[in-house]
Amino acid sequence: MSGHLDRLARSSDPYLRKRLEDELRPTIRGTGRPFHFTLTEEELKRYTRTYGEQFVADPCGDLTQFFDVINGRFFARSVPTQLVVLYLFGTGKQYRPNVGALSAAGEGIAGYCLERFGYQPLVRPLGVMPDAVSWTKRNGILRLALGEAKASTFRDPRRMLEKNVFQFFVDIKTRATGFRYNYEAYLICSLFKDHHEIECAVLHVDLGYYCGTSVGGGAQDISTSVPAYDEPAERLRSIIRLQAEIESARDEYLTGVLSEEATRSATLALLKQEQEPQAPEEVEQYIRNMAAQLGLAQQWQSGQELVKDIKGREEHVLKLAIQRYRKPEVEIEEED
Image (cartoon, rainbow, N blue to C red; front, top):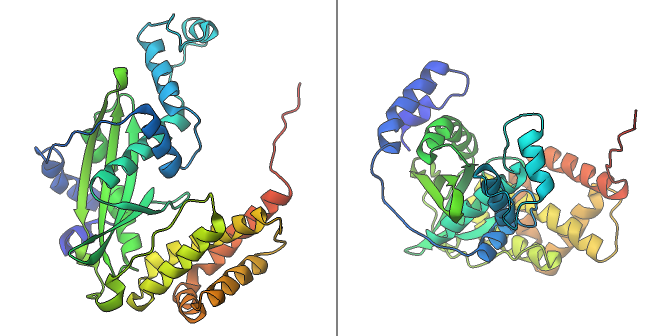
């Protein structure tokens, strides 16, 4: 990333968009650095559950069935006869793969690639770019990665890079205003093919241009890993410890991401303990109490002050979550 590319990343200017795309096209269409990975179906399922925004029970089975149908393997075990009839004699609309399965598989592949590139999963933001925030240490220095995934069953992955690169850069720029650590960004595009073959193209962007300051001392000595949601109380403890480790860096973006994750984990911890929260204040108090138990109340509060401008949005989402738990949103269609 450079000041020149940063100036071109403006979402409202089509002229600048074309200039940025033109400048990056030779890089995208270049030879790049080849890689080859192999993973099992069980591994792909596990990665889709770690990195996917939607839960899909069997993404591999869904995609295999799609390719069986469009390639005329109608009597393969994976294809129900009724589906063949719908495909051949239905409305005639183009047959498409399960969108949820394709998206989750693409996000799983992106997460798998990030881990093979040396990163560990940190958090999975919901509903916003990036699809994954990961971390690693190089020469004792903390580096973070923003991973964004795109997937298709027909489009060339390099074309997917070209199609999405401008918005990718705009999104990076939006988040970079809060950076203090060294960040990298990966746009990972996957073409799923028949016979379990996946072709990927990855655009890697070094975001050192946005590093707000030279982060040294204890801020480099990050050691806390964040476990999965299975044990939400332990996950919350880890998030609070991590927030304390990065507190001196004053990285607004990472602090905001961790604050949102703490809210989610605390909510789940209360529900697991059969203490249904009635209001966001109860969740916030649970987090503060946990921070105090860990002796990290001051560091936690300092981080909350840093991201106070976005706390309103976080509270709004939490209110909706509590309401959804108390009164599930189930739409029932009335028959004619």
